[in-house]
Each structure stands twice: as structure tokens, then as C-alpha cells.
Length: 508
Image 1 (tube, rainbow, N blue to C red):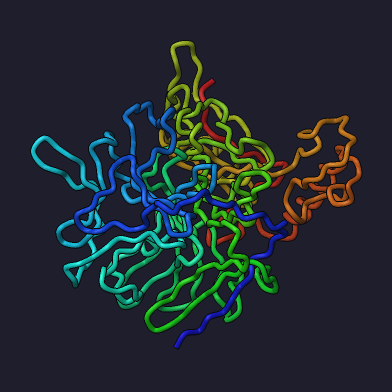
Image 2: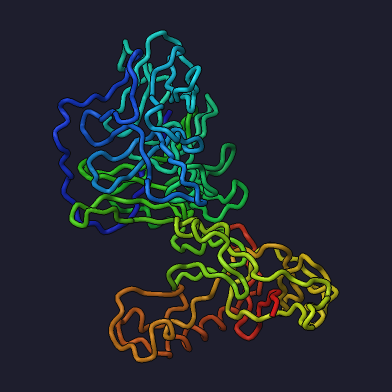
């Protein structure tokens, strides 16, 4: 028995006009045995909205200075002028020569991407479907789903494989995120490596809770959860109660003996939409606005970019107020400027000069030193050094280990960090400085953490240095009212007071 409950994601949206496709009367939406989809060909759904074929994300740029062409078999919006892929078959195994590749229904009835070789064809990708008939056909449906089914039946029971069961970074309306208890299939989203490379990235978005409470979780490297919807309470997921009570975009949660999954639905069928796990690790729901001829984000999770685990990579500071959000710590430089240019900042920064280590000095007599960083959220994975009873002793303890890169001493005692520093986050004070001393115009976009915001941000009056004094006071009061270590999102995050310092090793 199915139990389906609709959740509603709130947003204000001016309805966009439907993008009318050009005439597709002569196009083909199916591939049969004996036929092939060559490099320059494409299948187009019967409504003209989606296309299947081989594509490049950008022929003029490539990551890691690798100029080898990368061609992918994928599905994209056919009626949108801004190229937008929604599914990729061979993301981790692109084809270099477009003229040599083709998509076919292979001899065993599965779909396969073949590349012509000197002696024989090699298989780049295969659907590896469990076929129970000797006659299959591939069809691109009107909802963007590529299905492999029996050529003798249109019934859903005759589908042997479908792209909706194997999403990459995008889920479309009608697609599912969740699992099939009977087959063990787990449908989840995985980010792409960067905006060019379609290989799987570091972030995933999936349903958790096979044998207990169910929630939606975003994870870094399959081991570090950084966002959760909260458990399902029978009406909605506990951390997103704002999704109840609206009527335009619904998020459906379905539970049955066979399946447990979420899917979204839009009431207006003329609106083009997609939900993507971005390269940045944020989940984003987007709709196409014909007026601006671009995608507009209507929902993000987590809302703050700096809440994404390791978004900026090691030895960086993340700041939600500035753009870009990531900067290298003092004494460090970007590891891969090419990757940063393609929105992949997980490589972080590297030290400009090696440490001398163990108290040794350079030929000119300089030694390893610390410099303070104030008003930051400390990184995770701190180690407590209980024998240090002062800041000086804490510093000496860190200097005694070659792998120690930072320490902090406060009411919680001595904490040290070894090797890479991740998730250092700037607290959002200094907003008046960010805007400028003489700023007197009304700002329409609020900046800062809710609860620390001064009334001026809401009332629309001029922003002055007083907003920082207000935020400082609110922050100090909050710090006095709770311990220096609190649980947030399943991780223990330690906060320093504004008077204390966060320090890490650097060479002068």
C-alpha cells in the first residue's frame, strides 16, 4: 500500500512563457537494433523538449591543461538556448574522437557506446540491462527519461533499463531519489568534477534510513555529511518545515514495501525545471525564465555556501559575504588556478614555503612562527592537548610536531590541528567595512547571519559601523549563553570569542 504525502517548496515566481520548440516533425525519438546514433546525430523526444546525443561541455577549455577533446553521450534540454545537460552516460570515460563513436542496441539487447578501433570496436559504456527478450528498442520519452524496453509493448512493465534509475547530477520531474527494496537499486545524485569535466565529483545527495527514520542527506566523499533535511515526521522533513502550505511546486515522499523515494512535481507543465547537485555541493532547484533566457535558482540546500563541507579545500577561509567565497590563508597560494576557474575549489591552497619544523631555523636565522586569525569558526577534527595550561605551552606543543599546522587556546583548553585545515569560516562581522564608510544608500539584499543582523538591514536605513557593534554585542551575548563547543549538523564545531585568536603555522 502506498502512502504519498506532498510537501511544498516555497518560492515566489512570475510564470514564464513556454519556450516553443522549432518544428521536429522529421526527428526520431527511438533507436532500434541494426540502427546506430553516430557522433553528429541525435534522438529528440516526441514533444521536442529533450535530445540525446554526443556533446562537449566547452570545446575551448579543459581542466588540468589537458587539451584532449572529451565527448559524452548525454541528454539535454532541446528547446533551451543555453546548453544544459541533464544526464551523462560515460562521464568517467569520455571519447576523444567524435567520428569514431556511436550508440547502438547491442547483440544482447543492451545500449552501448562503441568506438571504432583498428581491429574491432571497443565498448566505452553499456547499460548492462537484464534483458528477457530478443527484441528491444531505446526511446527518449517526453519527460527526458531514456528507456530500453521491449519493442512489442509500451507498458512500463516491459522496461528493462531507464536513465531515471541512474541519475548523474540532475533529477527531472518524474525522476526519483531513493531506493528499490526488491532490486537494491539506490538512486542518488553525484556532483560533477567541475563545469567542464563530467566525471563524478566529491558530493552526493541521497535518501538515508532503510531501517529507521528517513531523511535526505548531502555528503562529501561519501563519509562527511554536511546537510540534512531532518527526519520525516509524517507530514514533512523536520529541518525544512517551510515546505508545507504552498501549492506551486511539491516534493512528494512515497513509502511502500517495494520502494521509498522522493520526487518533485510542478503544477504548470509548461515550466521547464531541473534539480541539480551543483559542483559547489549545493542542491539547487531551478526553473527556466524566458524573459531573462536563463535558469533561475528557486531553492538551495544548504542555503549558505560555506556550510558545504570542504567547499574551499584545505588552507582556505570561506566567507559568505564576499565573492568569491574562498581565499587562501596567509602564506598559501591556490593549488590549481585552472580548477578554481572551473568552480572546483576542493583542491584548496598550498604552502608557499616549506616549514622548517621541530624548532630548526633557516640560514638567515628565521624560524616557524604563528599568526593570529580572529573571528573565525574553527575547523573540525581538533585534538585536545590537556597538558598545556597556557597559550605559550599550547604553542610549544604544536611546534614540537612537524604535522601540527594550527593551535587555539581558550576556555576549552589547548586544541591543535594536524596536516590539512578544512572548513575555516569567517564570521560575518565587518559588514559596514565591506560596504564602505560613506555608504548611505538603501541596500536591498541582507548580508549576515540571522540573529546577529542589526535592525538597519531590515528597515532599509543607511548602513554604518553601528551594525557591526550591534552584531558584536549579539554574538558576545550568544557566546556567554552557551558553551564554546556546540553540536551543529552532526559535527562538533568550536567557536572562539572575538578576544581570542586562531593561529596556524607559517614561515616568515
